[in-house]
Amino acid sequence: MPDILEVPIADDLIRSDTEGVALLASRERATGRLCFPARTENDTRYERMVLPRTGRLWSWTVQRFRPKSPPYAGPDAFEPYAVGYIELEGALIVEGRLVDVAFDALEIGMAMRVVPLPFRLADGSLRTSFGFTADEGQGA
Image 1: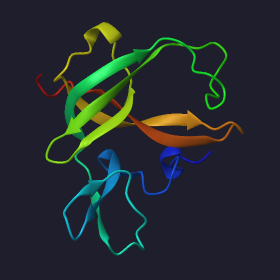
Image 2 (image 1 turned 135 degrees about the vertical axis):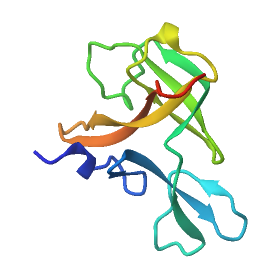
Image 3 (image 1 turned 120 degrees about the vertical axis):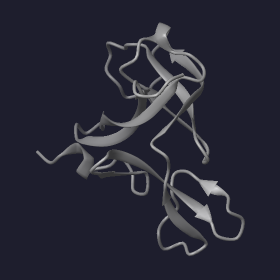
């Protein structure tokens, strides 16, 4: 089975390297405006960039009930999960799942870092998305 980082959920979203997983964005050449996820590389109006891997929790919520299907295609035994907005320093705010952190430990301003998040498609194939987890090495 290939490493999940070799099969991203979408093109122009994430990449893996020796430091882990990184989010890809585009900077509009004319205005400097950042766009996430990245635009296709053949769009010459933009230049590709890697976003900072760390940031601060800007806001968050907990999804406590199973979303309607479709579009939700997850397991029948639904488990609540946290979703947050992470302010990536000097860049922009990105929404993502919050993983491996207790709901009652979440605090606005806490240090977060991007991590790979396995995602199983409806056909059973595994892809890699991204999430955020507490960055224990950084203070709040």
